[in-house]
Image (tube, rainbow, N blue to C red; front, side):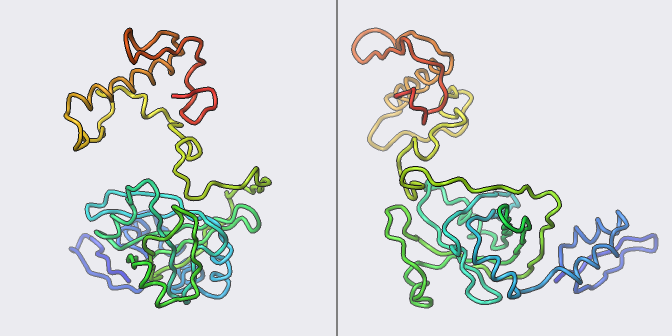
Length: 282
């Protein structure tokens, strides 16, 4: 719950309120003249728990968007997906979902360590074309601790899809995202053996779709440090060789990497179209 300050000609007056939302949104509502309209929405649509229809909605979702921020306010927004119900309703005030190894960065978990406030957005693009916002406080719980408390939770044995920790969210606000501009999408039949859950195959994960690896060293600010088992000169030479090869593919050039032992040729190679493309073998 919030308080906000209203600055008037007679000075600053503290106004206490039980209205949902932040101090900032309340001040903007005053400035924009939408306070009454916002109050109707708060009264009619915002709950501090999940009602039965919300819980049913959560239980059939296969994806959601997760917003977090670190202690400085730097934000991160990410996507989570799984089988229906992978975002578990523990009770009307608590949600939980598993976190896996992923790319090893763990940006969301890192933010939660510093700032527990999270925002979840679930959107049903397929049936109801409506969304559900859930805002609250999150904490990470070890997998074994979570299973002791909730032994019914499913265990996925696919490598890379075994939960490292769980994120448990205490609901503070739950409210609708209106259907007005949500597109109506349609599922396509699964191809082959379905999605490669937990895969470490670079191409199946999307490869270098956006060409980040083909950026020259001077344009890439986040090159990793040298490996402990290699000196800086050796690491730099290897990085420059890989990046140079990527740039040649990007330009569709057919020249080799150089002469002598270890030189590689891209003669006849098509223009670079991403590391995952079947037409490349880099």
